Image (cartoon, rainbow, N blue to C red; front, side, top):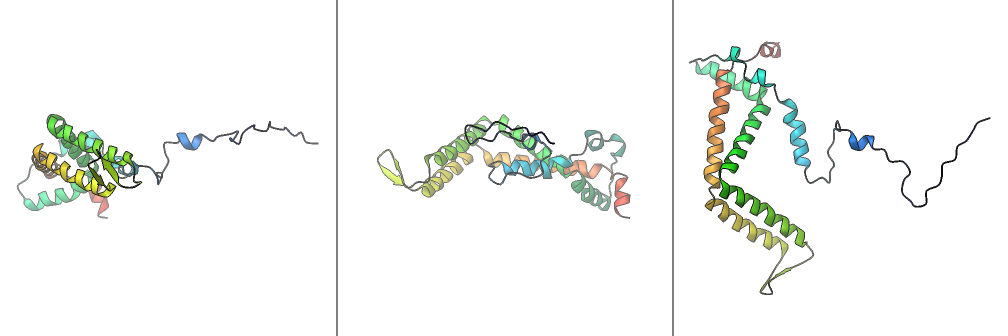
Length: 191
């Protein structure tokens, strides 16, 4: 004989058991397709998972100066691939530093993102009446706001910040890649 346990029937249509293990699993290997921030998840999976440790990135025993451009180009070739995630974080850090130290640029970027968010909240139902004076479609409102945003970015010094980020990143990254000798594992990659 077997004993049967009857579970109480639910009053509403809600499930009686919810599997939360899939919700709490941080090792999930796929991003939801409808997620707005899927690009951040992909960035984390692609770039941030390959970050090399700091003791390897700043290994003082491997810092050697050379005058041979052929040796420098070989080091660039190896180090730019091997430390690409670390170099990406350096560029991201320089970009954040340039925005924090330039308050007008930070305000402009916040104003741009806030404006696009507000336009998206207005809806895409049809033409939008602006103060009873003019009517704009959502696409023309986006285009008008984008053009105005470009003007604001020019006045807030975005071009100078972009070129500063490019120059500082190139100097730091190419300097580090030229001075750091490839690790022992490079010899094993060629076999």
